[in-house]
Length: 142
Ligand SMILES: [Zn+2]
Image (tube, rainbow, N blue to C red; front, side, top):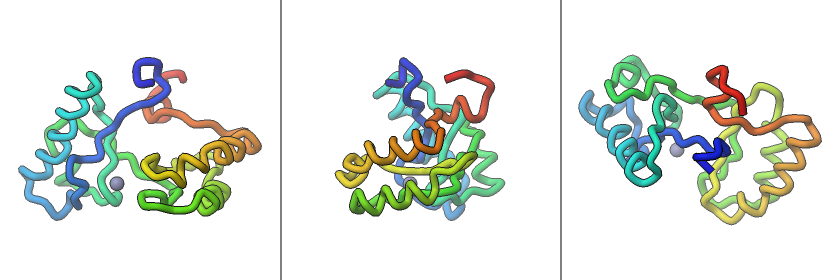
């Protein structure tokens, strides 16, 4: 899916810690360790996009010299980082799937997987789509 451009990998750090509370060296170690994992496991370079855990970032995080220069924040969430019913996730999709909204979701619980067909219908009904960050933040085409 990565090779065909359907999915883009980004860095979300190794331990999901609050980067703004870490030492300068730990700020660099967290995304670097995840970067190395992504590169060795999937064979891709995920730079420059990263999502700082919980959205917290500052000048020290931005200055980290690991090549992740594009923090990705969001406006809308499916709130599915833990177990949530498919109906609740679909309800949040109805709330947040709007033009120019970057909505975060997870795919590691059954509720999300069960919600996917209905989430897809919401996107279709609203004439919206899904895009990789590369497409959103560059002039690249889908
Ligand atoms: Zn997270």
